[in-house]
Length: 158
Image (cartoon, rainbow, N blue to C red; front, side):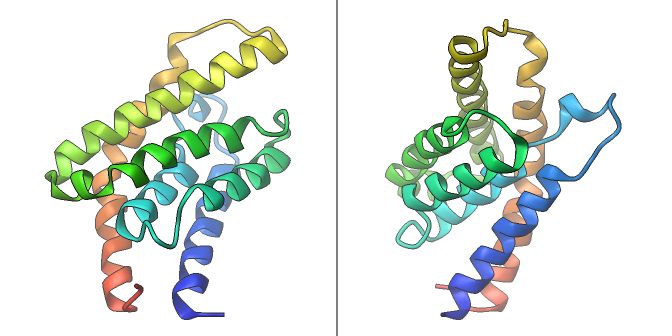
């Protein structure tokens, strides 16, 4: 197993832990989508390594971990990662804050797709608070990007 595969797997595993870590009830609606943010970083930085297959498998693990209907996170992660992988060259050329704005839009798309699928499967209704994690994730993007880029360069992950 290569060092780059191990490091990418470890970073996604840490994101899964952060996504599952309990938060106070009042802060739970503001939890950023750590797993999707990390997957988006790797799909922009190394699109030949992290792609839709990674998103699908990670989404299945997330579905099993949180108890959501099987395939919802897989599908929504795959759609978002497809968009980032297919536009990775454009995204790399944007400034960090422009990237953050686009990542915020991708996260909003993720949450709207999740709502839409859950609405048909579980009969839930839209609450504007569903989009708070998109805003928080957009604000977290520069720090996630800089941290993962630092480690990618330090460990020479290609």
